[in-house]
Length: 329
Image (cartoon, rainbow, N blue to C red):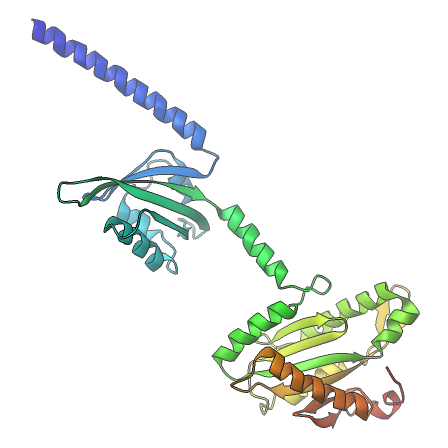
């Protein structure tokens, strides 16, 4: 009789504790939902993953209970480019070679959308042989922060006036393209641009540079890279050798694109273009090839402007040279 009464008391107490646990879990879910924070626990031997709020499945585009929470499912949604680093970090900690597991990585949702997460965890229980039994951790959605960080990085390499790459961006792309193979650099300096600023004002000069950037974008091949060093100086990087038959016609097209005057708010303006074209050598850094291209460009200036020079050997543009060479600036 007493044992039956004790059993009933234990059942009632068990139900009460279950309700308390369920209530606590609901409060935890409510507190964490909307924060981007997910708390998880992995039972290592079985691979069973306990998620303490609904954020994880929703992040991957699944409805509640649509996806099984397990180590293998989590692993299958790791971004392919991040998977090796994430798993190396995780198993390094499981084997006791790091104090905790922590890594920023991407998860791929059901529809292919990408979510950036800050993932952190540590072993909280081991068996008598020291093998890990349970790992607990947090999983924080940092997508917005990462996108903001990437946007800032892009802005840091962009010229604010034209939207082209700035010097820093050009140097980064120069290094990347040089590591991939042959490379040619075209250094562009406008002729008579100072007259535009002096006669029509700096705002008109800025509008001209913006329009010029658009014209050059239209001529730049998809694999080419266009940037502005500052002022009226531009650089075009071409991922092929200087001797490539495309080089001179493309350079000529850039010069010819200035034949049409620029329509500005307070008038019309015409400028020319002097260009130094140099092949990049194996030992060159950006400054090395720029120095040679700059010297080649000044040969064109001294010869009367509006033209190009390859390896410091002037090749004069053929349209309107005699008329334009009378101008100075």
